Length: 194
Image 1 (spheres, rainbow, N blue to C red):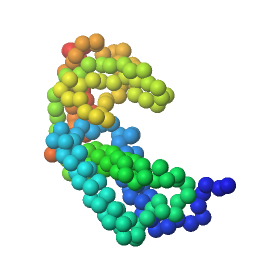
Image 2 (cartoon, rainbow, N blue to C red):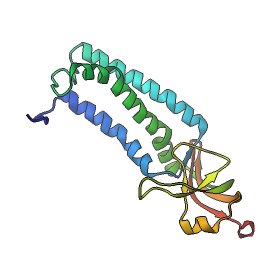
Image 3 (cartoon, rainbow, N blue to C red):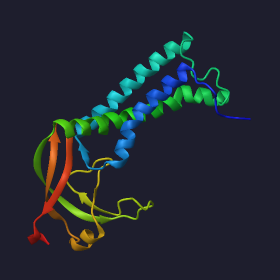
Image 4 (cartoon, helix red, strand yellow):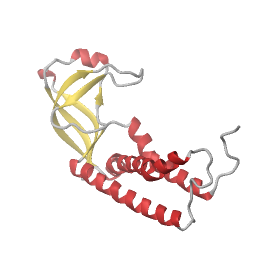
């Protein structure tokens, strides 16, 4: 018994392309942790994602009812219960998550990188050490008191971690800033604080 298919219908190709294009932001955000999104943009991204999902689901259901787009009809790989779950809950939740990552992080960071202006900000930071489950994870970080955002952290080396004091210090952030947020390019601190 083989599970692979020799040919794919247009329905499967379209669904695969939507998922693949939507996954670009997720992949990009997994490796880029230097962007701080504006809280208003983060809130609006939830509404944008909900709107996109509603439009996408409405189009999908209309095409599904008319028999034009039936991505799970001839598939024998999925049991009936799993087909219903995927159509009603699984796919919309998964695509909402992908759309949210794109609208909350990928698009604002891309906009900021292209159209942002250089600026400096002052922030209070404190060193933090975390046990990383992965070998390539960020073990030593700087924790910012002025903001705490999803998918943002600033990694430092073990040498820098050992050099910094245990108390908070003031740092100057060199950023690229736009209306959607800012990308932290570098930070410096005054040696007198140490």
